[in-house]
Length: 204
Image 1 (cartoon, rainbow, N blue to C red):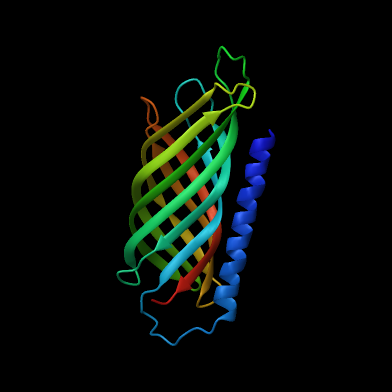
Image 2 (cartoon, rainbow, N blue to C red):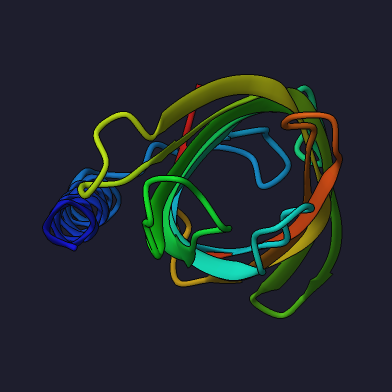
């Protein structure tokens, strides 16, 4: 569908622009001298895939999008995070009076919680996080303008991540697998979210 294809291009452009800014910030600006154990903010931006598992009459389906996370360190190993993600996709429609066979689904989530940095081996670092917040979802179809549903629900994410340090300022988040829970309608949906992208560290 044209609208979904447009959203894919828009998301890809946002990710590319954010990564370019991050590389320029981390690679061109001089890094201030600091102790190795000093805490630093971390900003992550990357691609995200949501393996959505809705209950009810809609089969499971994949959604593509972007993922932004900001880490506010209390210590170098521990602190709160602010997490934003957005995904769009299409799915086979359940039986309906509009005779629509495919629907467009979008979902935006904002969550916050705590992150703990775990193991470190050479340039690899691991972390785990637990987040809670809200998610806004919508269902629509170009073929039936009356078929439009929006809802806000509780959201939670639990999981970890593995990061590869490229320099003191820049790292690649190789994978961030999370269980992603939402409560749309009268059901609970337990999906899986996979993200990867660029991390930029900023000295407070």
